[in-house]
Length: 239
Image 1: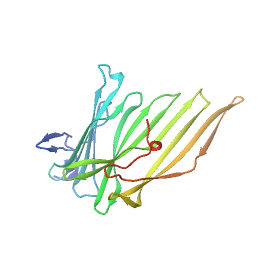
Image 2: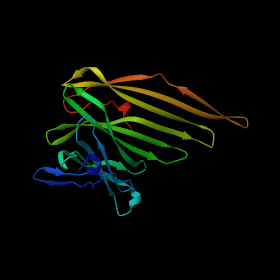
Image 3: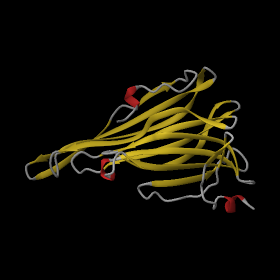
Image 4: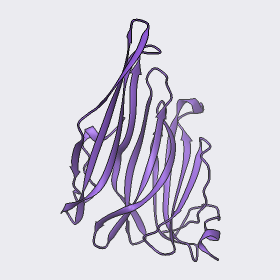
């Protein structure tokens, strides 16, 4: 059975004697659950599987709730789980709602023999007057048959604004890239986060609605590994 056929199996996780069994399938987000699967190019015959399921905060689903997270690295040739991770209540979803996950297999090489993968989580507050959306990045390291987050909650995309009318207001758009630094701490390379922010302002001038776009100065921040996780300053997090 080839890799493509393997990835058509349904995603399931069952813990048996400390081992999780998982197979992969893409399942569209329906507001309550989703499944993602992606072949990991860095390792032959390995795929990354992610699943998230909603638990409401109350009997009224409109009150929001939490999404759990299940992750696994799967051997695509025999359907065996090589490493797994689970976090209950991983994502809060209320006024700013959880919108989905994307598996990131960019070349995150943190040491000569250490390769990690990423998970991007999307959130959105649909409001014409006070719009807000963000994307968080987490990185996961394999240790034997377990996965461990070494980075959580880094905001790599953020849009926010406040509009007093159909014209007047201000919004910001921030995008961040993550590169591997040349220095290291506690065995893992530093991460260099570059932030680019654009400010859009709109205002009335007579009967006209005018706008102005300003690119703020690019900033770079170094994240260092403290032995457990990369330390993220509050300025690079989101609410």
